[in-house]
Each structure stands twice: as structure tokens, then as C-alpha cells.
Length: 126
Image 1 (cartoon, helix red, strand yellow):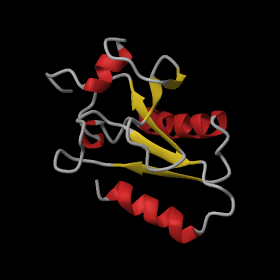
Image 2: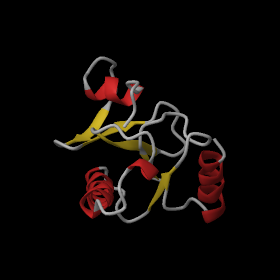
Image 3: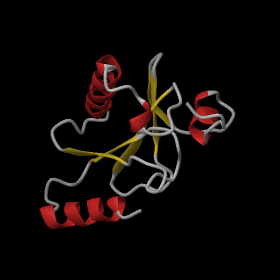
């Protein structure tokens, strides 16, 4: 766990405003402030881990709950038929050092796979 409080912990504590799309006792999902798709939310555990590698491999409940929450949020946002999930791991690639999963979707059904892949590449390269 981190000694410093992340911006996401401040959002969870309601010290900083955010548009909340989903919340339960362990996770919160907020709109990304720089969306790369029509729907772009961040799914954040309320317990602050700097990176996925800080979570014990044996903590299968956490790992399963993270993916289950992604699916719940996708369903709530009506994108469960087509979405992408992205997770940066490590201090060199994470902009915020608090685990967060990017959930993107909501593309027009007529959008080409090339356009979707282009948006995903932009997300990956940030």
C-alpha cells in the first residue's frame, strides 16, 4: 500500500468531485476526464494499491471481484455486448499510482474495427 493518498482515494472520500457511474462497498467507477471512447470509465478499488503487482497472487477474491465489477459496470452502462478493458501496471506506465481499470465502449455499431483499434491504440500509448 502507498503512503501517499492518490487522487482516486480523494475522489472515493468525496474530497474531489467526479461523475460516479457505479459504486459498491469495494469499488467505484467514474467517468474518465479524457475519454478515448464514447463510454470511458475507470473502475477503481477503494483499497489503495499502487499497482496490480502489490495485490497478493493468492488473493483470488480480489482479482475475481475486479473483473466481476468490470462486467457489472459494462452491463449498467449498456455496453456489455462490445467493450474493451485495459489496465496499466507499474510506476513507469501508470499516470495515477492506484489500480484502475479502463473500461471503454459505446461505439456506433457502424464504426469500423479500424476506428475502434485506433482509439484503443491511443489509450495504450498514454
